[in-house]
Amino acid sequence: MSVIQKFFIASMFMCAVPVAILYGFNNNLFPGTDNLSPYSVTLVSGFLAVISVNVVIAFYIYLAMREPAEKHKPDPKFLAEAKASMKQPTTNAPQSSDSQKKEQ
Image (cartoon, rainbow, N blue to C red):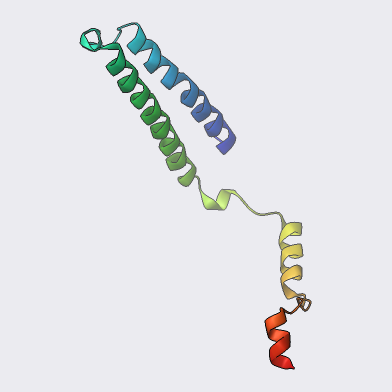
């Protein structure tokens, strides 16, 4: 499974799981939620929805970290240009007024 597919699946879960949690709390699908006040239901469902998104993000990061590093090779042209740009001498940056005063 590629990283893009993992990202797409994680994005779908980031949308679906909070909506399912909010729907479940608003329609008393979870046991014990019918005894809570509307204020408490709003707080608990919102908190769990936010936590669920964070869990999905953490799971996606875990899957991305498990991706083998050897699988992805940088573009050789890009590497050659980057190495060439590092070997070029830098131009003199404009000197600040403090350094000019010290030289005089």
